Image (cartoon, rainbow, N blue to C red):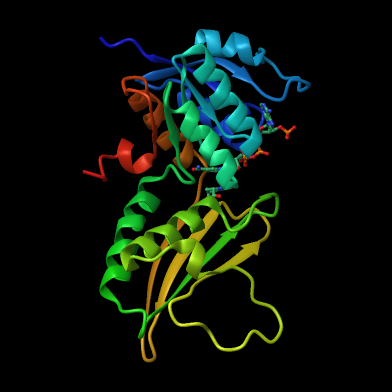
Amino acid sequence: MTKPVNIAIAGALGRMGQAVARTLDGHALARAVARFDRPEATGEDLVTRDVALEAAQAVIDFTLPEASVLLAEACAARGGPAVVIGSTGFTPDQIARIDVAATKIAIVRSGNYSLGVNMLMGLVKQAAAALPASEWDIEVFEAHHKRKIDAPSGTALMLGQAAAEGRGVDLEAVSDRGRDGVTGPRTEGDIGFSVVRGGGIIGEHSVLFAGEEEVLTLSHSASDRGLFARGAVAAAVWAVSQPPGHYDMQDVLGFRR
Ligand SMILES: NC(=O)C1=CN([C@@H]2O[C@H](COP(=O)(O)OP(=O)(O)OC[C@H]3O[C@@H](n4cnc5c(N)ncnc54)[C@H](OP(=O)(O)O)[C@@H]3O)[C@@H](O)[C@H]2O)C=CC1
Ligand SMILES: O=C(O)C1=N[C@H](C(=O)O)C[C@H](O)C1
């Protein structure tokens, strides 16, 4: 019988940290060996970050962008454990720092660990490649709970990136992320983003391809955070046997082959 992979949970007191702990409870391939949160936080079973990293083969992190970068750098400096990052809202500079850390250890980072969203990315790319920008306008819509602090969501940006790749354009150059007041007509080729925040919505994402006489909508709806936690645990089990590199869930699922 294979030994379970030892996992540390960063941000253990958070919504996702708790979902990861529930997923690991009785898991066949992995087990939680340490939990930590902010240094000043208190909570049953919490240890310091260094004690957690010592005990673990992989650390699953759903915290905040800067905390995730510092964790990745700390793991790289000590040569492990592997890191699975679920936090969203990174700046390009922060992603560049993760790239550097990933030259020393395996790091998986994804804005969404669900199978469905990772499938959706391929479908969006395919549709964007097939439907010409002169006739089809792409709009990404997302809705989340009122406590979410970043927008657009990491998933919405991943879907926008998939659409941009399908069209062979740079997302940064065609993104339209804020419409208010007299905006003028839509610019051909733009990829628009719109955001809703309210209540306890777990995560809704749609990509609209709007033509003059028809609209194609590709969408995903999450109804439980356990979905993301299961994907992150699968990523951690996968990561412990990978060489250093900055991976994402497409790599874990074998969708990039
Ligand atoms: N990739 C995916 O599939 C998913 C990604 N997410 C993303 O994960 C992140 C967390 O989401 P969620 O769990 O809802 O948020 P929460 O705010 O509920 O949890 C984050 C936890 O991390 C803690 N934390 C903050 N800084 C540190 C630190 N330096 N060291 C250790 N712990 C720290 C927070 O403490 P405090 O409250 O004191 O700040 C909090 O307990 C968000 O960026 C979200 O977008 C969420 C769901 C799925
Ligand atoms: O903050 C959340 O809750 C979620 N964040 C991720 C994102 O930003 O896309 C994934 C999921 O939709 C839930």
